[in-house]
Length: 361
Image (tube, rainbow, N blue to C red):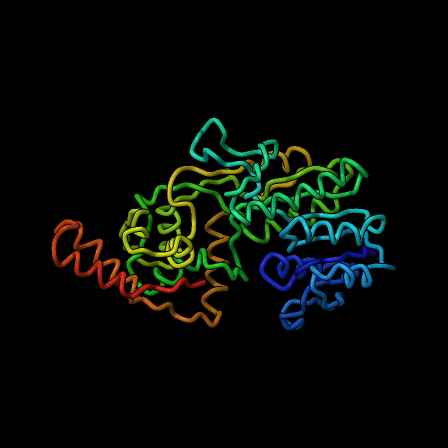
């Protein structure tokens, strides 16, 4: 019987991972802060230990006399997180699967087709003063583990997901479409709606994580992209969900400069409005996982988004406040009809700025 450690596990990817592991004949220990009721995610064959992963002393105390066949770390965000867990697990684990992010790649020119699709040999992000904090943190975490593999053969493998979607997703992404299309609202999309990207269905990603954890030594020290490798755009996303819901999709496009016009904080553009890349092309190759391990990503967007919607509609989803969005739709319509310098348009713009919309998550 395998002895497994899961770090994280109470939300989305970790929750789906535990559900899958709970179907297997294994012993599971789950480490997280304990902020979520264990009955919501903990399988019968799992034991929960509440601890803050930033507490190095407590982590060492808990893991001092424990050994594991496989460690699945779902919530390692920073280099410090990696150092703490690495120090606690040296010599005590046969396999360690670190769940990272596609954000760790150096993506200066995401629309340069010479670089696409991005494979695992692509350069990791160069850490500079203006590097996005999340990119910096996730890259530093990876570097800790890669250095440990090179210097001491620490048995780590890395999985780098692209945008993850599916049941239990607490990040406001596919729900952006569900909220609006299910209510017959006009859908606001950036630019011309032709920004392209790829996603991965959460259960496919979980299958990859488990597959890598159980594979041979060939995966040690290696990274594998978690992506369906099938391009999606805002327009395609909208049409796909409209078809699933049997709804007509009404779309209005907005320029990405709209945030500057209304003096919105930058994060509002991605947390309250469309949450995916607004333009260009961003895609990740999944050939390495298939070529080296025989793994394949099987879930189509139709199946995955249907599952995601069926989960979402049964949740207690609070309807968003539409006031600012309605004003924005009116503004875009008036600009097209009258131009930006029309007095009525300028007055509406002032009204929107005066609302000073808060960032929602």
